[in-house]
Length: 283
Image 1 (cartoon, helix red, strand yellow):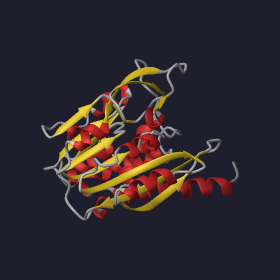
Image 2 (tube, helix red, strand yellow):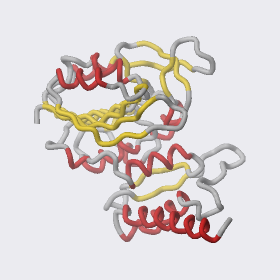
Image 3 (cartoon, one colour):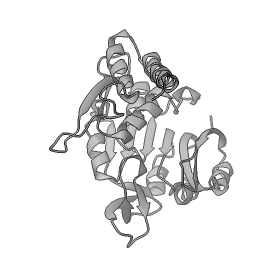
C-alpha cells in the first residue's frame, strides 16, 4: 500500500470515528460510541466486525443512546446488518422524529428488525403505545431483548404485516429478509397479519407508522385506503425496480397525505432503488 493510500485510509477512519463521537448523547456514553466507531472504521482487529464466537452466539455490546442511563440498545458486533442499522438510525439519523407536528399516542413499526427504530420512538414518547412486527426469527429474538422495549405499552409480534391474515413464505435474514412467492427454495413459513384490519381499529389514535418491508409496501399501502388514522405520520422505505414507486405515492396522496423524499440509494447489481419518504396527514 502506498503512503498516499495509507494516509487516505487513516483520514477516512478518523472521519468515521469523529462522526460517532459527534453522535454520542453525552459524556457518559462517549467511550461506548468511540469504541463502536472504531469497530466501524476497522481500527480494531483490522475488520469491520468481530468474528462470531465458536458456538455461534452473539457478541453483544450495550450502548447508551439517550440522556438517561437506561436508554440503551444491544447490538451483535458480529452482525454487519445490526451495525448498519445502528449507523442509519442513531448516527445518520435517517428518521427525524422532530418532523412530526404532534405527539403520537400510537407507534406501529412494520418491519421492526431488531428494534432500533422502536427504541428511538420509545425514548421520544414513553407514554405512547408501541407495536412491532418482525417475521424473521433471529431478528425477532434480538428485538425481544432490547431494554427499551421491556414495557407494558410495547407489543412485539413475530409476524409479517400483509393485506390479509394467514401464512407467507419468507427468505433471507438481517436487513434483507423479505416475503417471497410460495414454493421458492430456502423459504420458511411465517405468520401474516392483516394490517389494514388492525389499523382500522385505531382510527381515533394519533399515529406514527414506519413501513420497511422490502418491496411489499407496493401491495400493503394501497390496501390501507380508508383505514389511516385522521392524524397520522409515516416513515417509509420503498424498494421498487428502477424506483417506480409512483403507485404507492399516489395511494398516499389520495388519502390526504403530503409527502417528501428524504433520500435515495441503490446497490450494485440490484435493479431496485431504495427511496426513503416522510408523509403526514391531518396535522
